[in-house]
Image 1: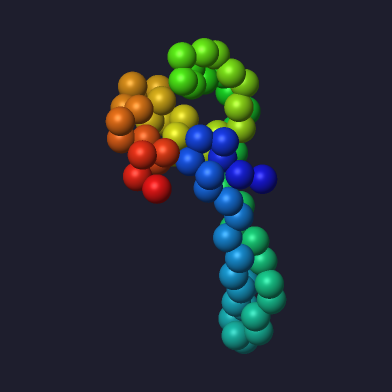
Image 2: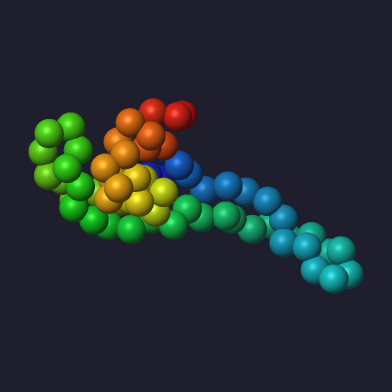
Length: 68
């Protein structure tokens, strides 16, 4: 899944144990379903916590959508 505002997706990497054995894992974004005023209308969207905090502060100009 991905954030519908900034497009943040899963990252891939390794889980590393104490003995340095590496296994594949996913780093998932913290997606939350919420109602957002986006482009002039209210929409129910899956957005990441960073975009949600920016929207709550009213910092649409500093939201991740404009930095990527």
